Image (cartoon, rainbow, N blue to C red; front, side):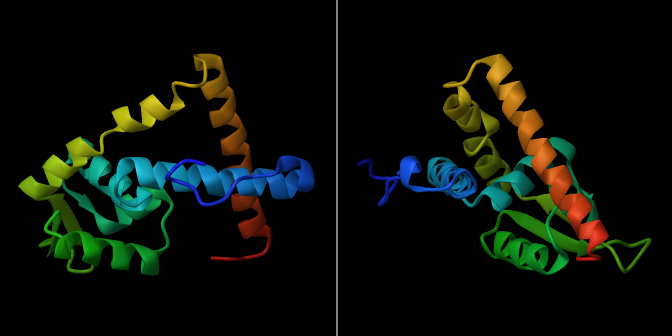
Length: 151
């Protein structure tokens, strides 16, 4: 058993849906361990590194993060010295985020290359197929939220 995992998935003992869920959970755990920072934090840093200053709302929408969760993430990133948050001068309701120099360095350390290395086990066609399947799951979830008026 590897150091990243204290459990093994016995697919044969699980129903198909449970096996898939367990495998997603395991993959999520692996990604978190490999990048060294929580996935949401990493994505925020990478997005800011790529786009420069952005509003909290822009980042939340691009990454699909709930408002309450995002506020906690942003506060943590600010406390760690990775970002600064400032009120927008033209619209006081908006909060602008930008990377500090420390945040820029952290964004580079957790750059997508680490993710690509992990996914190199798949061919280009398999990666594209996986993306399409994950998109279907996300779309189905979003449709379910709309049908059930869930925020």
